[in-house]
Amino acid sequence: MDILKVKDLRKIYHTKKNEILAVENFSFDFKEGEFIAIVGPSGCGKSTILSILCGLDTASGGTIEIDPNLKFGYMLQGDNLFEWQTIFKNCLLGLEINNEVTKESKEYVRQLLKTYGLEEFIDAYPSNLSGGMRQRVSLIRTLATKPDLLILDEPFSALDYQSRLAVSDDVYKIIKQEKKSAIMVTHDISEAISMADKVIVLSQRPSIIKNIYEIKLTDKSTPINNRKAKEFAKYYDLIWKDIDYHV
Ligand code: ADP
Ligand code: MG
Image (cartoon, rainbow, N blue to C red; front, top):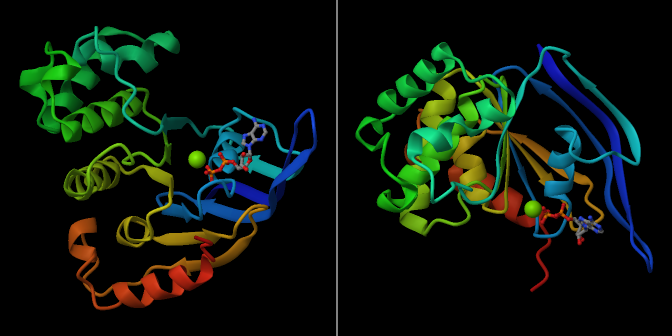
């Protein structure tokens, strides 16, 4: 089932001096339960697309049809945890903003923290946690409001390479286990192939869709294992060629 249908999305930024065409002709139908990755060079318009999809910015053209019952959850660059609040309080933030803190919703957060190995840190502060654990807290905060669609904008970019692999594996498992749909923006081609069902490749700005790949891997499992699949290198080469990096 389609939860979000985007047709010919276009975005022009007007600055004092000129106009910047950031996105052109972006069309895609997002289906329930799918994990979609959007890759493209830095500055091509990835965050712009996400901001428009979740209503934080307006489009300059095109149409977006959203399932009226669809609830969005965001996880943006870095973990954005408040250092002066406990892990539990940090996880309640989204609920507080929505005025949804109840006995039940608090219990749900407690349950998520327990399920994902953070029970003993409920009353700890972010500085006591590793980068990977902080990222998990950030995801739990997003999940607390029970969104259907998760919007992830370069969620792992603050982490070093090793943690990045481990955390993406973690986050992927949680998203699948909680049966969420996801749209993740990244400039990391391997991350996109290892996590997504489909990868949308954008060109340099103004970003147009260069290609869309359905990732079919034998023995598709978790992101870390998917990197070992025999088709992985083939997708990597195709996407690398699509993205015309100018260095
Ligand atoms: P990405 O996330 O792919 O790195 P962005 O979507 O953030 O790229 O930005 C795409 C282009 O639009 C960039 O050239 C950026 O400078 C420009 N841009 C983004 N936000 C604004 C804004 N508020 N005003 C003017 N230009 C902007
Ligand atoms: Mg961005």
